[in-house]
Length: 85
Image 1 (cartoon, rainbow, N blue to C red):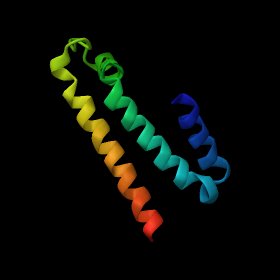
Image 2 (cartoon, rainbow, N blue to C red):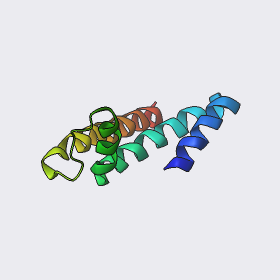
Image 3 (cartoon, rainbow, N blue to C red):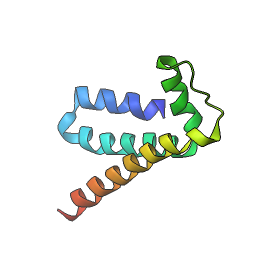
Image 4 (tube, rainbow, N blue to C red):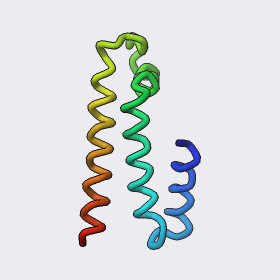
């Protein structure tokens, strides 16, 4: 995941018209899939700001999974719109 995000960053700096849009959509989908598959990681980010969050509590996992689902759905809808356009 880090490699794709770093690659997207450099693509946006060096060649935004050629690679920026495509890699941004791929990054959004990968981050969303990561949130769906590993909600503890997203809760770990939130724990830095809110130390009382228990990352191992399964009752909280729906929040990052919902956010990840929106990211994946948004990336897929943008990709589908771009392909059909």
